Amino acid sequence: MNNPPHVVLSHAELRRMMRDCFAGAGLIEAAAAAVADVLADANLRGVESHGVERAPIYLQRVHRGLARGTEGVTVTIDAGAMCRMDAAHALGPAVAVLATDRALELARQHGMGLVVVGRSSHFGAAGYYARRAAAQGMISLVVSNAARSMAPHGGAEQFLGANPLAIGAPIGRHGQFVLDMS
Image (cartoon, rainbow, N blue to C red; front, side, top):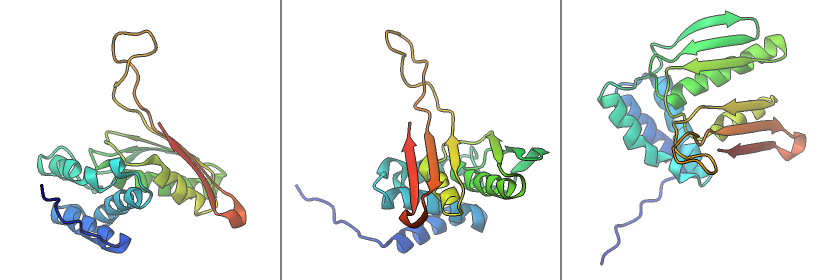
């Protein structure tokens, strides 16, 4: 039995390849770059389940018209330190980068920033966004809902999801603390 040859790419090459795939599928440059960065980062950190192995799923959703880039994203509520975004079915990683950056902007203005996103999809590894905030000197809490996938202890029906949770904080000269779990 022959094993297929392995292809080794640098992080930059992997990111570029993913960006080109999503741009080729019609995403605007910023959205394609955001999705590529989130997926490549997951692989770089050894979280393959949330890395480029998700690219075919995301691309199928775009080709079927079930997902798109961020051009339709709107802010439906903008009230002080709080914001609600309607993702208009944008790919999760693309809109989550926008939401993270908006939360950081609000935090700089108001001391905290809370951004909620609706009508989106799987957003990759939650730790990516917590690291993004910590890199800018901010403490973050990143959460998402998830589909029902397991029954509670003693239950017979699926009721609970593997809801992701990430916490990030800068820790001075030691870099960043990030907890990413579900």
